[in-house]
Amino acid sequence: AKYAEDYIQLNCQDEIILYTDGVVEAAMNEEEYSEARLLSFLETHRNDDLPQMIDGLIESVQNFTDHKGMEDDVCLIGLRVQ
Image (tube, rainbow, N blue to C red):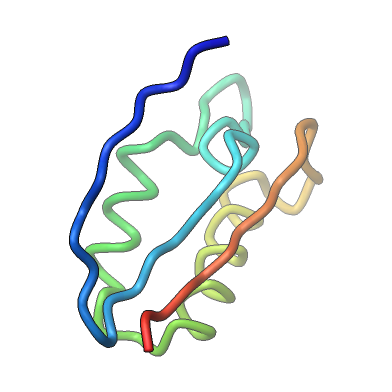
């Protein structure tokens, strides 16, 4: 497999959220959580503390799927540049 490479400049206090496709592919009634929903959540909660944002995102995905569980692996990692 080939993967695209890119570089971005990160500054002190920048935050990064890494996630597996299981987050955006979490589904309810064949509708996926989607990248659009993820981006909307992150934009709405951009001023939250990082741990609070991660917890809120997990809760948002669980609420979307009506707490039915995930069919795919789900991993979220929040990083803050020091």
